[in-house]
Image 1 (tube, rainbow, N blue to C red):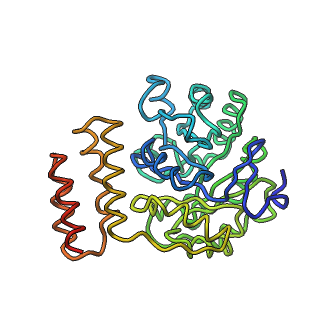
Image 2: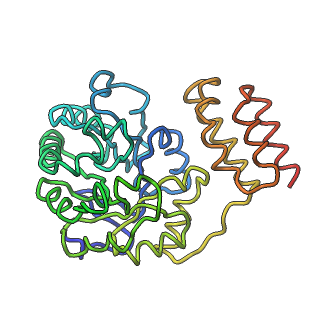
Length: 328
């Protein structure tokens, strides 16, 4: 479907209609089943995306917790990473019955990923990236998409040609993070650069990077001329963010940010869900990374976060959280 046929509030990806123009971006160790289902409680229609899933690890352990989902989560894209076409195809097939879409990671910039020829290193080897898409596409009957960056470095930006090649290989949509690999997560995402894709491909493209509020979401859509946007790290401390962005960019309704008390209640609910999913001790330890995201810019916040991330007793954690509310 040509992008010019897209409605202002839906995106057509292959034969799948997403009744939203907002998706959650994949975040390793973050966008687990728990976070996704909590976001889903606020947004019934956004496209959710799993954590990045290693194709090699998945083939060795197909029923790992990282692939857990349920029938309430759809639409959900399962993102796989790797550089061996046959393994990527096999891993895609393993999760096909759980996924709405298979997404291929071609944008992760971290050293341990790119040193293994995975992630953004595929932008330096477009022919291999194409072969991976073809192999995955041939192995599944659901749409295949991919996520990548502007290029490996400022001097080697090849995202337009890369997107065209991925389209010719069979992907039904792409997501572009507005930085190069060499920038990692520093600097500023270049939404204007992403706009160069407009008219160069006939599939939807999503813009990603530095979208932290409904206002920045709307600005990104206007600047990038994208068909949709992908929200990453900003959703870690605000379960309602994707829903609030949808309301603003689709319905022009600017909902208020959650109050600190509402955020503390989100913390409690999120922690409880992680414990239910992982067990008490593992859930408490896994959740530590989220406290700084939820609890920002409050008096004594540093000390409170330190107490929370070092505490392993559930009742003590709840007491600390209650103390924050009582001292408002």
